[in-house]
Length: 255
Image (cartoon, rainbow, N blue to C red; front, side, top):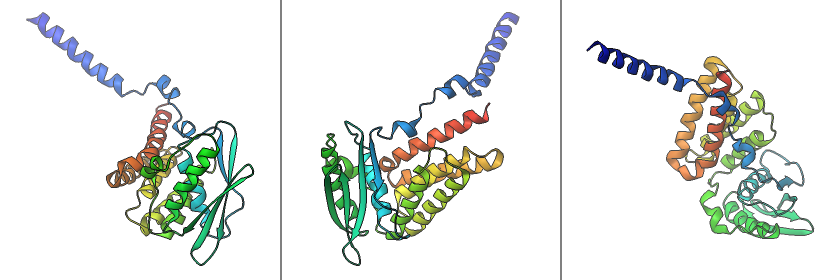
């Protein structure tokens, strides 16, 4: 009887000890976390503006951001830069111009009404030019849609701040988060704004410690959950990036 109790006690201790060990982060695994941020960026295809935006309402900002997001689903066979500009034809009428080498592609649009439709055709032409065809139907599930020009512009501000540099500072991330928050206020159904906010808050949390970091992590998860409830497919890319930041933060906190 005593031997049975002893065996049971040892088994219970093994389970408890094993449970405790399972809570300890594997530092070797932490070092091996794949960097989804660099993995998701095409290594040879760059989208750059021909000029700086003239003002806060310049549609060049969302055109630049959306082309980057859409073209991230293809890659060039060689080092290629797509130069982007926006020309105004009327009060709300514009032309998005994209230049690859000596070839110039243009797409007319009304801002914000027909921006997505114009850019899908432009992306198809550009991807064929860089020898990696991407048909419009493959872009459609990822369309970054909102009926609000303010939401578009503030989302672009957030995305540009979030993706501007590899060494983000708390100031950069706070600026990105505030821009995404403004985009959400302008359109409460804007999936990409919620997802961007979740990523920005997660990245910010990785640079903070203690209760501040915990609060930011909780907020990041809450905002991403809103995006996923609206459209989990469209939230997926930024959710992967958010999870990468959160995992890196947990590993750093365990050191």
